[in-house]
Image 1 (cartoon, rainbow, N blue to C red):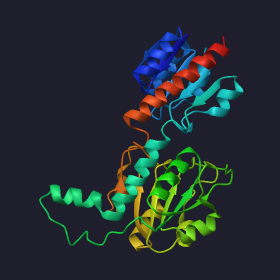
Image 2 (image 1 turned 45 degrees about the horizontal axis):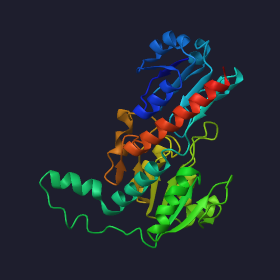
Image 3 (image 1 turned 120 degrees about the horizontal axis):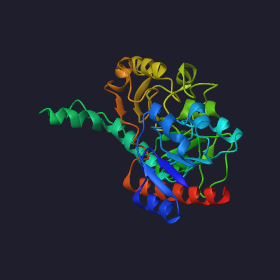
Length: 304
């Protein structure tokens, strides 16, 4: 069968697809080109850049499988695909370690001004006094909203750093280590750091907005390495400017790349940012490519 890969796949993943007897075409495409070309393929594999919309699905008259190498599937119209008998696949755990490590890395950066001191020293400054009021993660309380694959990996690392971990996740499943499961209200009130690892609820909107920030302790640090929009960006900027929020770390934004209007947030001196690279490590890409390829081969075999 013909498989279109629009956002890249690891060499091992491509080999698995080819060894499965499939013809693999790797090419990034603009939306209009994708609409023209999708009728040629039984399967499309994407990451976050390509949007598999209702229009793309309707144009893909041969489509049997849509696969995303990554955690979420918010760039795919899943309901419309499944209503037409098209299988939708993803790799929810393959990049969990990489995202968790970036989350912890951002926490260190904001706590010790690493993003600021790096820029200042490269500019010829020696800002020892300016950045001497950092804080330790040790014995601080980390609140994790969303205890899925990524949230659990963050919890493991936080416990290893000597942090107290509170977690809120309604569909909680038992783990092989102990964190305290609590209410969202208590987590917001007691956590020194809050990190989110949940999908964006397009109906309810942000999981953290003005109301939630008002419940937090003064000097909280907020980390979002999940999805743009999970944290209300305007409310977060207000919290930073008022001093309620000590710092923030963002790997994801409502608009990617952020618009000119959003520059006030990611240019804020107490915000550490990265360009949506949570799962972008060599190890994660290898795992994602292998896992999604194996799933696609199995699914296409079932769909013959």
